[in-house]
Length: 380
Image (cartoon, rainbow, N blue to C red; front, side, top):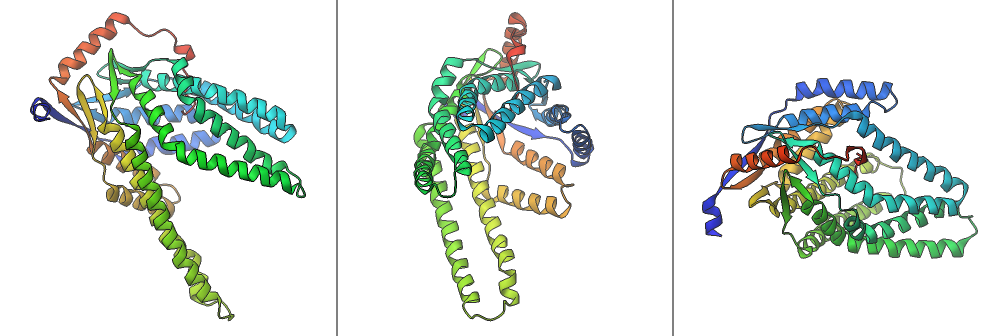
């Protein structure tokens, strides 16, 4: 461990974007997306990513986003068509809806691979592209259990809406099945996130260099267990306190007083920070766990996000956005990006310039990957 410290040099990321600059991009994106009934959202995404990538710097050089809007629009049209097919089928015939949902679930692993390939191939640093190995067979092995569980849960849950009110027995059976599936999903989420994150990490590349991921399943179960226990503790205590308060205010039988009228706002006042704290805690732990176990050719990435600072960001961002009816959204995005970059760095083993130069030589030798038409951006 001492040898590693002696031979590594930390290089911090930096974000140089400004709220006023991004506001000009954001307001045009919003206006044109509304006017075109959502079609311009693909162009809006490209413009937004180009701004954030271009203002994210490492060792004096910026990242680049090179995607074309039409490719993003193509993926969104496919996703929209699949959604419409399932939506209308679910209203017409449950069996047809089940078949369509099954087909969609079968396509999810392929969509994930194509989306990752699209996203990384269009991300560049010092004119060297990132990439993603299109291992479709491995993707289906990784996503098989999550897709089956979640697909079954969604289908059964959707069928509860179509039951007759007097069909009590079927409702009970479906309700119990949903609870069992939901419990299974909760218990297996840490495992799913671990295998999916590992799949994405080890098949990502920068030039010819591949990433490695050293986190274990135990790390993810430990993280989720703490999050579950904290959630139960915080919301259990708050729920009990407000149940007692509500009972004491309503047990007199008198007309509601000012305090009882304000009770819903008081609940929101306490529950919102509690929810945001848990969200900040989980986001922080996940990010730090991911980057703390991600390496590329001996270069170690790391993140030192702090829960309380993320809570402050979420609280102040939420209040600012609400008070300005959304106009401070660009400000919120910029300050969040600036903080995330400031706590992210890479421990460089050797010479970063030499490493990048080697990848540039490799990319020049192999040329641009053929197969762009098979990449999609569907949001996975």
